[in-house]
Structures are given as structure tokens and as C-alpha cells.
Amino acid sequence: MRRAFVIYLLVCAVLAGSLFATASGAGNILAAINNTINGNQGTIISEQAVKCWVSDTPAGTAVTTVKESSSGGEYMYWLTYLPGKTIHSLSFFVLFQGKGWGQSPLVFHWQEFSWPSGYGGGTTTPFGVPWWGGDPIIGPAYIIPIVDGTVMWAELYAFSVTK
Image 1 (cartoon, rainbow, N blue to C red):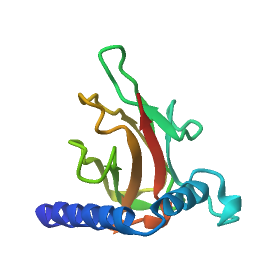
Image 2: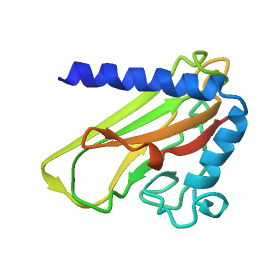
Image 3: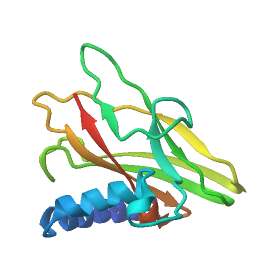
Image 4: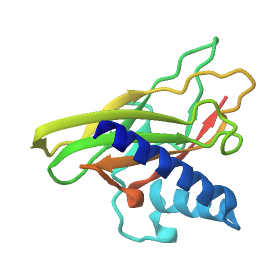
């Protein structure tokens, strides 16, 4: 069952990559995602609550850029998800576009949580981006929460990895 779920996630990653890489006006799609999900909902969706984000501190204010760690310093961030309801499982699926789909050695990062009897609170967990020579992971990245086995595309959070 777990292997099938991992294969499913990989297929989703490939499909998402294909969507963003081949769609005409992909920059406009990414801009629309950023304006809709990252706290500036007025552009497209007026009353959607942000449930998933990256921050500098546990459950802190959302940030739209994170630094990759390097020999000069380790940078730690936090992934947060507030479901607003009782859930039984949560996975943070972080997809790295980098300089281009298929060019980043770090394709995705995954953290999984499980509460067999259910949990109605928020989840905050540490997160960092490792350093890769040649900067292939510098660029766009996305958090896609998976709740109780359902990919929550409407709660996708877009951010950028910088030096």
C-alpha cells in the first residue's frame, strides 16, 4: 500500500512538472498561484484562508523565499498546515522546480504524519533546503499538502529557493 502511494506521488510530481513546463504562459500560471495562495488572495480568490505555508519561525508569518543551506550557514524554516478539521494523516510534499523541471537533483522532499484516532490541531515541522553545487535547485518550489490520502491542490503554496 505504501509503495503504491509513493508511486502515485511520483506520478503526480511528473504530471505537475509537465503542466507547468509545457503550459503556455507558465509564468502567468505561477504568478496566479502565488497571488492566490501566498496571502494575496485579492487578485483571484477573495476569501480563501491560507492553510499551508513556509515561515522563518514555528507557525510564523508566511515567507515567499527561502535560502539554500551552504558552507557559510545552515538555514532552517518551518512548514505549517492548519486543516480546520480533524484529520488522520498529513504529508508535506515539497516539489523543487529549480532551474528547470528535471534539472534539479533534489526533486522532492516528503514528511509524513499519522494520527490513527484523529487530530484537529495544526502541524508545524522543521524544513531546510540543502546546498547543491552549481545551484540547480535555485528557483521555484511548491508545497502540496496531502490530507487523509487526498492531494489538496487548492492549498498548494508556492515559494522560491535563493542563494
